Length: 369
Image (cartoon, rainbow, N blue to C red; front, side):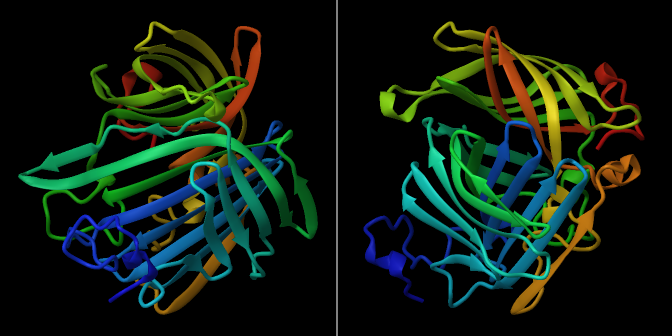
């Protein structure tokens, strides 16, 4: 099937753009963006998934208000024939200027969330090393990703109130990934292992942080034995500088967690880079966005990429000021943090996931997540 993309001279397989080079049903292209103010009083996360081998496109939008309530919207549609637009239900994603301006919109919906935002890139994107994972002779992960940090402009409506979003007050980060990944559709049955639920004894850390003149992107995995299993990240200069990103070569960490929970409350990162740079970053939680509200790691029978019919919407409100609710919906979280480095102050997102056991931080077999 021809789409508008087939007019462009960027084909890499002997197929039209409505097909991908793999027949694996887990092949996915994902987009994610987070927008927040410096206090964490208003946080928005939105994202999209395209699953060519499932004929599904889905998306979500979640808005956290003052770390008290989180309003969630999840949507899904049949992918074809509208394969050449990122739009599902009231949500839409448009590239206005590559790596500089991305438009994200949400129209009327039963959850009362609306927005019209423009992500504005301030720092060069950090391109991760491809991630490849195999088990029992089968590749179960083969993805690549880039992340970019910037600011946001526009407006957000939630709980009947419109908030003007301006670049001087609202920080933003986004990523774009594609390839074969875990957590797509229902967990496989009748196989030796299914997906991330089978993994044990590790800390998974993904973060985007910004200071006034540099940003950091990082994907880091450490086993319970202290062995580094994955380290890919960059120190990213301002876009207008034209300077290259610098690889991060070493990570040291000391994290704090909420009582009786694996929810991160703060900590310290020390990052070393290939050019000899070294940064000691103090992190303090401002708000946590619970991405299970968007479907990450599954929520009440729903998983990303799951066929939900031609058009589908769902959602709810989490009362996250209740510690019991916060612990229940904790999983893959966007923790908004204030960052201090010497005399500089910045902000960003930390995704900190403990898969027990992880003795260093006191998590036994039955704790963490």
